[in-house]
Image 1 (spheres, protein in one colour):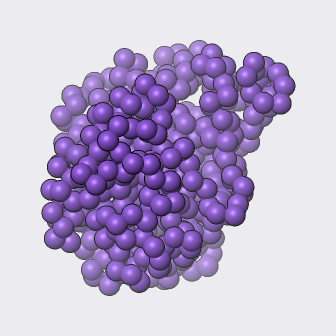
Image 2 (cartoon, helix red, strand yellow):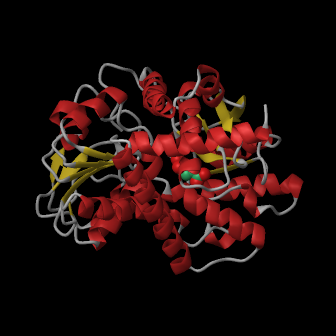
Length: 426
Ligand code: GLU
């Protein structure tokens, strides 16, 4: 995936995302007139856990024995158990996890589900491990985090580099000592108590909000040109949802490169090509484009669905979209955010745009606790209703306070967390 220019993978990027988050928060703190002590309390993580996981590997670089670092940052649980994904990616580090954990607190508060915020992960390139090695690594991570996780304490979920299979291993390892406990993790396979619709939920929410937002700015979604950076779970399901609304997906990219076709890319064909070859490269009927060029293509809607800080000072002036929908977490740096806003580009912020994922995780947790599964249509109907309602609250507050959608979303979320913290006492 594209990195910030002039930096090594993982370097600076995490500083940028913490910095970015702090700047966004400051705007909302000012508007809410929070005192310094309240701000300090809201920013401080509750607990940070770092573990080392030794693993005898056959393929990883640096010999047979490799020690991987694992993290779980629990930011705030005033409104309910800690909730957030696990990321398996080489650039995972404490700073990045800390910023992403905090974002989960605001995201769960914004969509008003009874959870706090957490994030975790392992610094690992999963491509260097066999399926079996990944299973052992995941289960050892759970052994070390066993006291940190809990159905009413902290519930992990998928993020970049993890998937329903990894969640199944977490369920298995945790259940060894605690008895069969499906509600310990969300994003599981449906066969093990996962929710219908959870796999596509984040992308479905992105597509739904994109359609809603497009009509708000009088941009018909029908035939609107869309560029999507990232073709993982979120990018793929966003593309699929938008194609179903007759939007024209003119460019897509993955970690290696991108493809472009002005007439529109057939998403199912792209998926089959990736399943066969591993990459989008050489997708029949498309031209190659690199990740940097892709973001600057003329289009109506740009959807960053990859990693952090891909829209930054280097390219913000060159973005040509009318709408930017943040399917990834923290994909736009604060300086780029200011530039885009000045240029009249509307941004739907991450804590709203990609909240369909954690919202459906909540539905999964509820179904697990009640031992009563819902059908697919019920899940997606509730997802759309809730996201639509939250969007309208954010839009109305933004209009009332004459501010942007991001600041309004942060204001709503911070206010809820701040009130919960105060009510529980210090
Ligand atoms: N990793 C996803 C996110 O960043 C989902 C988290 C969850 O479902 O708990 O929102």
